[in-house]
Image 1: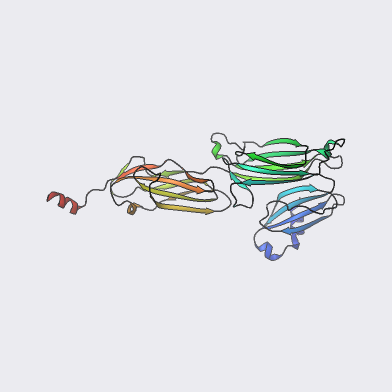
Image 2 (image 1 turned 135 degrees about the vertical axis):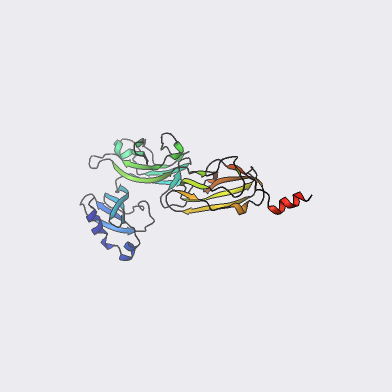
Length: 326
């Protein structure tokens, strides 16, 4: 699709909408005549709105314009004599315009098919649609995969997946990418196999972290060690905290928050953070434990093993004098 044509055709959109940084519109292409027209839609939309009252076969496309870039977000074909289908992906995370999940979390796909001629005697293309599942890993070289299944009945189906099927060599928890579900009408002779419904799912990796600058069981005689946090792939909406406990027990034991990172965005975040001196939180000698914890919609989880260490400050001069006088 010609980018200049797209930009020119979007001229019906207001300058105020363009100034917002992103513009979305639906392109309607009539198959019989090639006539094209565009309709602006809300910027939060991630898939095509339902098509109703289309008297002729047409291709519908959802486009996003940002600066000088055009991106096709969704597309399907619709018409009075084609089967109808809808797809909806539901995850445990409600806080994103485009459905997203973590690689180890479940999700469901709601599929509804109508308009199939199932009474018998009709050509296969009138009685069958094809459901495809496309896997697109973020890591180059991992390869994409496609799974297919034929559907020959009208009605609704709920597909339940315990986790995404995207994989990554070495560490499956680091896998990320996109899953896409598409329903196609079969080749009718007049039209090639055509997409009639689709839905996308963003798949994110499991976060991890390190507490650097301190060794388990180490002894510190004056101030707290200089700690650095190395954080990888923090979930887009999460609160990650470095917690300090007195003793070695972290479950059921009160804690002090040494540092906290609050995120509310669309993608994961990786960062390295030096932690300011937290000696004031350790008023007495003894054993302390640092734990790196992340809270997301999936629960509260440790990002690495807790680290216990000891504080043993030398006695103050006044304490030495009091001891000597006894």
